[in-house]
Length: 140
Image (tube, rainbow, N blue to C red; front, side, top):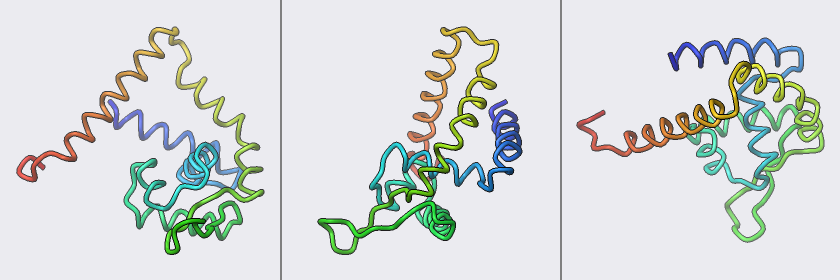
């Protein structure tokens, strides 16, 4: 059932975001950087559950669109930090209605207790996957 819900969520978000010229994955990057400016590529990858090369490619696409800036880290010579540009902040701001619509649509018909229970269960499932990912290789 999780696969079905994930697939439907992807279909719906693609359809809703397409008129805005942004993919669901790009939107996720912008949201993370909006909430946590100054992350490095590795931190962004971790926050998104992606490998670093995939996150780097996504950032490069967003830099080309003018939505993300890659800046020198003030105290670490080789490290960079990621920030939203003015255009990136404007894009995130323009999509507040999208975020609200998706959340309300997903939670329609759920009471407050059910919403909290779903979130708690999803966190447990994610933690279980994190644990499984660290399991000995003979279990993979």
